[in-house]
Image 1: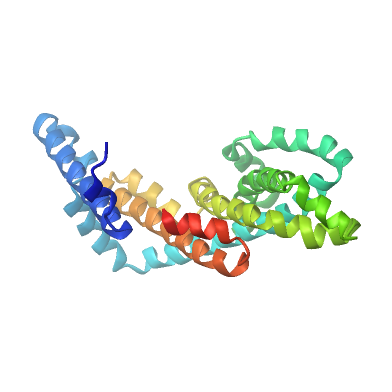
Image 2 (image 1 turned 180 degrees about the horizontal axis):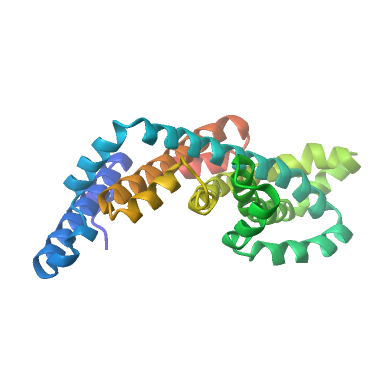
Length: 268
C-alpha cells in the first residue's frame, strides 16, 4: 500500500522520480549484460552512450529534416483521418440502416494490418509523399471512425428527450444536443488517434523514404547503431508526450462545457 507522503508528491516530482527509476534500471541492465554477455553489449547501450549518439544526431541537418518531415506527415494523416471520421461517424450513428450496412464492413477493415496495405499503396500511388500520407490516414481513419460512432451512441437518452420536449428535432437536435454532448468523447478519441498515427510512422516510412524518423531508425539498424535507435525512440516518445499535453490544453478551449472531465483531469 502506498504511504501517505508518496501519495502527496506533486505530479511533476512523481513523474521525474519515475523517469529516474527507469534510467537507473536501464543503466543496471546494460551493466549486467556487458558483464555476463559482453558480446551483446553493443545491443544494450548505456544512457550516456545514447545521449552521446543523440548529440551527434542533433548536429546533423538530416536529423532535423527527418524530424520536421515526420511531424508533417503525421499531422496531415491524423487531420485527414479525423476530418473524414467525425462527419461519417455522426451519420452512421444517427442512421440505423446505414450503420447496419457499413459498420460490419468497417469492423472488417479495422483489423486489416496497415503493413498489408503498403504493397498496394505503392502499386497505386508510387513511393511519393501521398503514399505515406495515405498509409497514415488509412491506419488511423478506421479506428477513429469506430470511436466516433461509439461516442455518439453513448450520449444519454435523457439529453435527447429534453431536447425533444423543448421543441428541438431533426438536424437541430443533432447540432444543438447530440453533437455537443458527444464532442468531449469525440475529441478524446481524436487525441487517442494521434498516438495511433505516430505508431504507423515506421510502416509508412519503411519503403523508399529518404528522410523521416522511421527511416532514421531503419538506417541505424542496418549499421548496428543501437545507440541511435534508442535515441530516436526516445525522441518519438517525447514528441508523442508533447502532442498529448498540447491536446489536453486545447481541450479546455474546444470543450469548455465539460467541467466534470476537467475536474477529473486536474485531480489526477
